[in-house]
Length: 131
Image 1 (cartoon, helix red, strand yellow):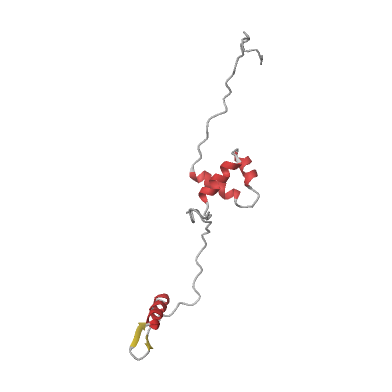
Image 2 (cartoon, one colour):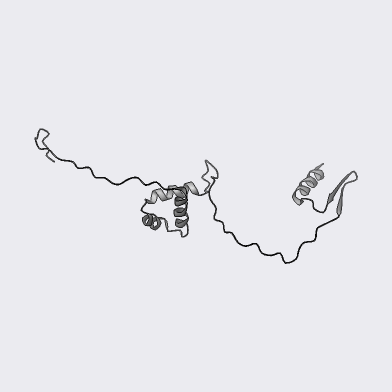
């Protein structure tokens, strides 16, 4: 370019089209993110394979994964799950029957059936033991 600003030289500029912006569906993004998480160093190679930038893939991973970051707490995300056939029970469980009587001190008594929720019973007994 000429340094003289009063020069009569005219330059021609050409417009180069870089292509259209691609739109990725959520299921496509999830597939790419899952593939990048299979091995720890697969981020760059996965991004090259799909023709996206590494930073875009990292943004997708951040939005699909649960990573606590102190300020926002835990984000919702996806978890890998595998569906397997339910194994056949070896011995059918006999239905529990009967009652249990628990005495706490002289004036407190708790009567429960055999099918009581153990966690709930433990909370009740802890409260009664404090009194």
